[in-house]
Length: 94
Length: 191
Ligand SMILES: [Fe+2]
Image 1: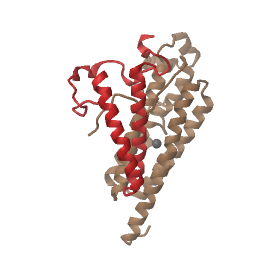
Image 2 (image 1 turned 45 degrees about the vertical axis):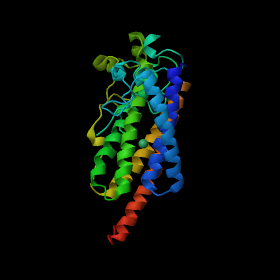
Image 3 (image 1 turned 135 degrees about the horizontal axis):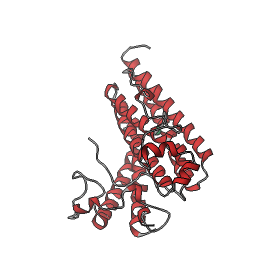
Image 4 (image 1 turned 60 degrees about the vertical axis):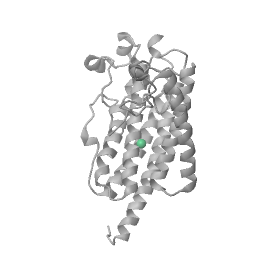
């Protein structure tokens, strides 16, 4: 796996934790343990995304990225269906 | 509104070209218990939910299902991307190829196109949440059948993740149903 892929995997792990905690909080909105976990995960996630976007271009469009002066990279491959986590190359370049 | 994020929720790994497996997995893209049906069902039922927790659960699970639709599409795309016409014929995927080449289209495993009749939006929160809980169990069962049919350990890993999410969604919908029952009894409305 290359650096971009491991950075992306880290974001996927953190964001999955945030998604799952978010769903739990939908039905337990005042669970203080879950709120604390969510705050911690979300802070880590924002940090990981800022580092990723500075290096590899925006993860989100429509102004939701951090606008690190590389918005032109939005259209760059690999798109999510082109990432091959099994080896170092995107699927398209095999 | 919705914002697109340029990443999958979970890695969709495929170890080799396998049009036979793609033909089965595509049912979770456009089949009766697939991810398109799930996301559209929840996102259209949310408008008439009576309590804040239910509006949030349907919005958030409906959104997560869109991410699952993208994972299933990625599996199918990469299972057929390099297939030869001979392989496609041998797998019985030639009727699909005739209409769609290797493009993604919303069909079930037998090739029938997606239809809105797969879902309901009843306006009655008890009826809708029961449908949603059943939908999660049907999706879980489908993922189990697909795992039985899979001969690709990487695809199986992704199918296991998706199966697990249906169990979590079922749990959240069950909690939501209880909250709606509490809300109704506090309003002295009995069903
Ligand atoms: Fe689900």
